[in-house]
Length: 182
Image (tube, rainbow, N blue to C red):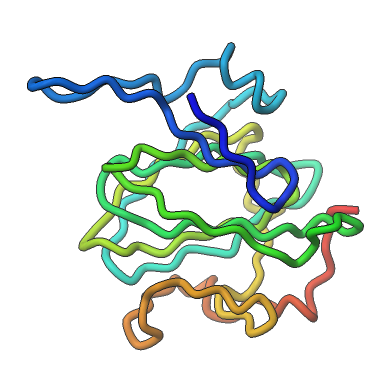
């Protein structure tokens, strides 16, 4: 696998080795031994979502002690995936990294604990899968406004086409946000 470092410490893009021929393709989507060279985590939960074009999910995180590292990928369609550094004291606090994940490029995105995470669906629909190193804990959920002007994320979806859940309509702006990650 090819590991591509980003501008945020610990956030990496992973390109697996894909073996293709006339029958199709094969690749290892996860190998604990090889991934151990990227991060020292033990994944305990896998999740999958399906969303239509224009859906923006995020920017979400879980507060400690239920914080989650995530390894995300797309198995159908295309998304813009975003990680925002919310670790107070980090040299990249308040900065984000975005990358396109698709069924065609097979890329994966690893986000360590201390990241707010979100994605926007760029194709007609997308199936999104992710591994987490901590179980979901609803009481520890947190969010930052997906359209925060300070972050200025280009979600690549026109504002009038964005589809949000109720919980993603009114989270705090980044300037009003108090990070639980010291």
